[in-house]
Image (cartoon, rainbow, N blue to C red):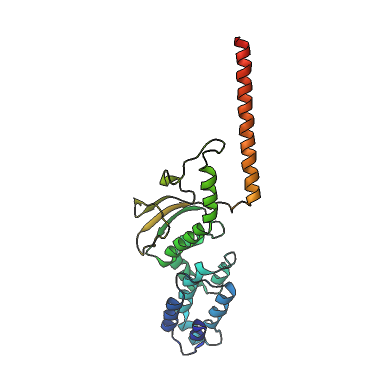
Amino acid sequence: EILHDTFADRSASSESCIEAINTIIGSDSFISLEQMVALLALLSDPTDAVRLSSLSAARVAFVTRCYHKVLDTDNKVEILNKTNSEERSAVEKALGSASFDFTPNNPTGFYKLDLGEPSQREIVLRLIEIKNEMGDREYQLEEFYGNEKRAGGRREDSTDCADLERVWRNSKLTGSRFTYKDGWKVPYSGILEVDFVQISKPLDADVKSYYAKCESRMFDDFLKFVEKCKGEENKLIS
């Protein structure tokens, strides 16, 4: 509401709009595509050429600040189409190429991000949120593969070696090896490198149980086959 009132104020300068943007839109803020389009329209009144020109910097600041906060991630590129060519170039330069390589719906990939750049630091925050959302699935996999009675035995995981982290892998912070831990406070400087892997959503409990039973049954059949072979071998020897 405060942002709406500031943008709607015909006497508001570009500087006051940018101040409101930086104050109100924090690291934990999100905005819908419809809200963003409506707010941007208040800064883009074509009937007032003087105001339209004077608020160009505010439009660039608003789009840059909100680009990674749009809930409708599939269509957020539409926001760029609401700016003119010069403003779009300024937004793309401010966001950096990494912003356009990052897709929240499919974030798997290698990232090298400058934490001193607000837009790139924002990507790190989004990656952490995605990792946290997959916490249940990580726990399921650790429980399943960490079971000593599992067919094939227990697999090593991140508790044995940090390099075996399932989601946040091979990370470095300004050239030094970095192991992600829950509650990590993202710094405002440094270069973060990480291989990020999106794991599938948690299996339904019945499906998980079914797969476990199938795997166990296959291993039991293999053991029976081995015992049968040993029996045949003993008969030949005797």
